[in-house]
Image 1: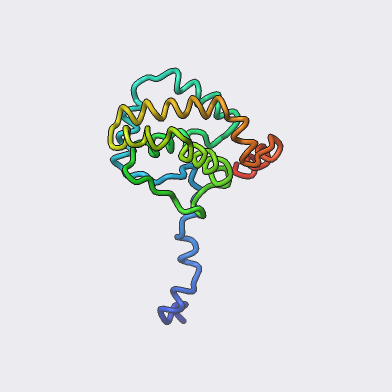
Image 2: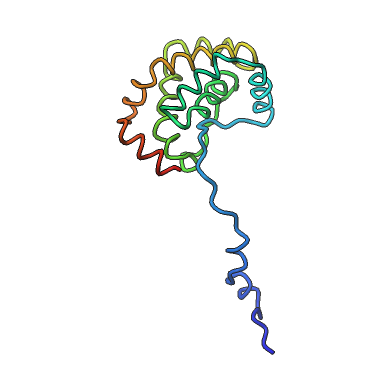
Length: 163
């Protein structure tokens, strides 16, 4: 009787590890990184019923499937002392093409530095400011998607490919 695995190289080159490897994770819809504490704070703030914000997100999701990630990123951009970005390679195609562009538009705006200085590290002011930015983004979503190079046809194709 012969042994299939005689050396460590035999084991490492076998199909055992390919069967154990988890499938490649889908891309992230979040452009900005957050800590567990920041996620918990946001989750706590969102647990309170906020029909206006939920309605805006529902309407925006019809146009941009990654809008919930963008909504979360607006809070992160306001609340975090030093907003950090996820690696571009980790982002989903939709987040890379649209969310990143929309978030950059928000963060490069005239009012962002002032609001940021008032909101960073403060939960409720950051949440209220992010709601204001989400409302602004929802009102300009068609314009922002077009400026990101997203014709309706290409947006539909990208969403189908992501699915």
